[in-house]
Amino acid sequence: MLSFILNLFSFLISPKGLIVIIFGIISASILLAVALKPMRFWPLLLIFTIGAGGIAIRSVGFLDEYLIGCVLLGTFLAMSISAVRLKNSPKNRWEKLHLLAFLLMISYMVVQGVYGSLDGESLQKIRWPIYFAMLGIIALIISKDGFPVPSKRKLSLIIALSGLTYFLLYSASGLFYEIILGESRWNLLGGSWAGTTYTVFPLVAVIPALIFLFKDKRYAYRLIASITLLSIIFFSFYFESRISWLLIIGFFIAGLPLLGFRKVILSFITFLLVLSLFINFIWPKWFTADVFKNLLIDTTKAVWQPSEAHDTGRLMHLQIAFPIISSDWKTFLFGYGFRTSRPLIGPSLAKLWIERGRPDVAEKVKDYHSTIAFTALVTETGIIGLLLLILNFLFTARKILFKKIIQGKLMLLFSLLATFLWLLSGTVLDIVLFYLMIMPSGLLTQLSKSETE
Image (cartoon, rainbow, N blue to C red):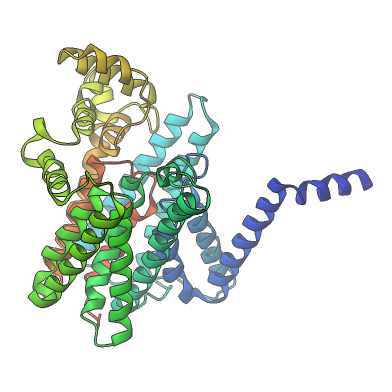
């Protein structure tokens, strides 16, 4: 007994033991916070989905899943002690169909996750059925009355503050690498954080929230929106994130009917001033305004002139998706199982490059394992998985489009489009926020409500 106590004490004071203690304290705090005050459910759900989705530990981005899992345990405890009771909320036919479509997609993904984990190659694959089941539980909870939903104004404020903290932390980490450690800020991307395409995904929710706050009557809310926008713009230039530049520009064009010409012009002036600062004082001399302009244009060519696009590599990943599943009707319909595409990516890319007369490139890519979300989804879940996901996007679009009175309708539709297009540029299938955006009664649905709803 004494030996066991000594070994336990020795473990607890070790680095691994301290991590276990810290995570245990965090878990208990979140669980009790939700159980004792159910009104914290939505704020914590938003804070963790926005503030933890881009963090990767040992190349695995599970932190948002872990924190949301703690929130769900808190909801179960709240219901068990009768702190809250879930009741069916009134729904029209379309809302019922959307919930059915989402749960059908989630059930399909759970089955695909179980099937993909049967090969026994990695215990990490067991995570996926649990992950999708968790998403289904969230959808069921928020589709019912019970846990209070903050007003649209408060939701926007929570999202903005979460985004401000998130992007300030990211930028501060890069500055720490450069100034304190004397290393390149790009080394950060190989450490605790994922690459920028993955990390900036919260912008699809944060920028719409900022635009709503810019219209708020309270000066404090408008100030928070301005500071958050400035931090996002600084981050986008500091890490040279092309997708961030395009999103900032696209959102403010889409938000023009809501904001008005004057506020949009002021936002673009801020964008150009920070750009000028980086061109003149921070970026290398060769990174001029013309280089910036050409980089933006070359990036957009992925849509209107793919053969000359800056991201030819990503386009090649798109082109291998359907050929991989075309070997027989079963794989075409159902794919190979969730997270089983890794050994298929490299050989398929190499074959495509050889067909294009580039054996030198084929040699470099033949051992690739990772790919963009669209190719992974098609390869692993087949045409059925893709159609189920698209169906949920369509239901969400209809919800926004057919709202009788809604400020920022065009902006929210642009947010939904950006969420879908992210499948073509990076890996987002393991980000909880991706599904929360299209969930029935999810984030975009809540932001499409008027203040009186």
